[in-house]
Length: 538
Image (cartoon, rainbow, N blue to C red; front, side, top):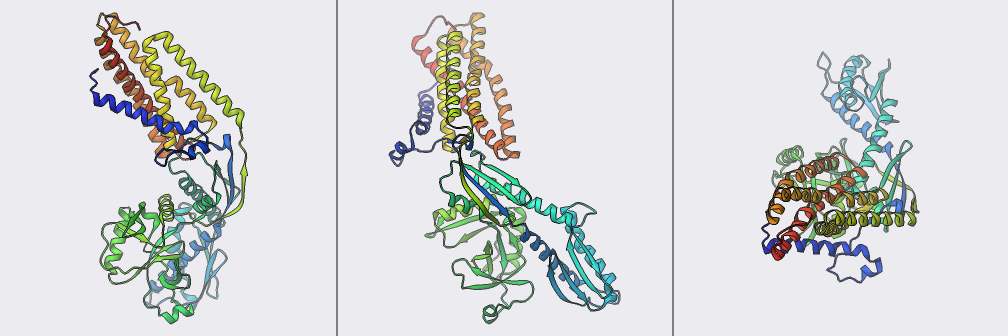
């Protein structure tokens, strides 16, 4: 147990030195950090909005466009259903003047006697949509058929309200994932009213970059190209039903006709990463299992045809399907550089916004707490640290001093990890660090008390220390693994501040166990080998 080979001593010492290097930037101001060598770490722990202020944005969600898309989707479904439907006599359903209207669609039956058949068609088309959004028995749409054969289908008020609430909630979650992928930056993101969102970002320096991140919709879709549309028809803006024109991102004067229905969407992505391939920046994407199967089926059935990769209604590229793409992955290429490709990968990982966002207001906000709170937090931290150091020395003597060294290593490693993640420290976070200082030595207390018990039964110093660590290890690991599991669950199922707290908690557990088990044991082992004491005062 107390066998510490030189390589292990070097490894533990190296980790502590690296931790000190990564934590040191927090001691210097921004001007001093700017003079560091290029290879030196410069990331620091960020102060939260309550301590240093930041930027405030008020966004408006374009929920009307989402409702329009829902109506258009139903219109496509009803058109197809009417084409497939037959009367008992085997006749087709004749209709005309199919048009969009406010929150709905309308059309005229050529034969009003077919209204009963049309009712069955509409019930079949509308019910599945209603069941998915409002629950059984509460359809999204309601319809009416007049004696003259005019059919109107409109969204219900309940469906409109539910859809708006859903869109705002989804937008909040997507924005949170984009600006705070690990949950360590503590942004404030919340709804305001029916269709507005407030976003507050601590210590934000570049507002334009932030706006680009959370206002770009990042709706990625893959469509088959409609090869039946000629260049003359594209120039005149004429496309058949079910198709639409889209411009290319690189050249907005260039247009292409694509099928309106997407063969696969960005919702079915597993991951997205930027890479440099064949002298250009690209974004590699991987579909989930369902998306991979759909992509494989579509490309298998359309070999030789072109398909379009569309991002926010602009065509990124339109390559030919030379062979079935069966691996569940694809590559997006365009006029990307390192920054834009990384930003696109981040947006795709976070998911598409369900609706466009418009910035209504942006301004700088001051700290809620201010410098006095930061100073009070520092004083509390110093008092807590000094109290723990004095207590450990008074109770455990030389062993307590070793525990204090490990406590210092724990604080250094904690700040190093938080700096690497560029975590945000809020006032509750300062309280958490003060609490960590008090709790970081609990593993040492368990070990030292077991060493005392072993000495009382007559064991020699080396044997007592060895047995103390061995017997206390299960208790230490049980307690910390239980807490680590709780942190992992909070990270998996939480969001925002809860997710950030989980990351900080997990880091604190790992650094505390490392410093208590490895650092103190290494110091005590080296001391026991050199001094070989006959008795221990602990």
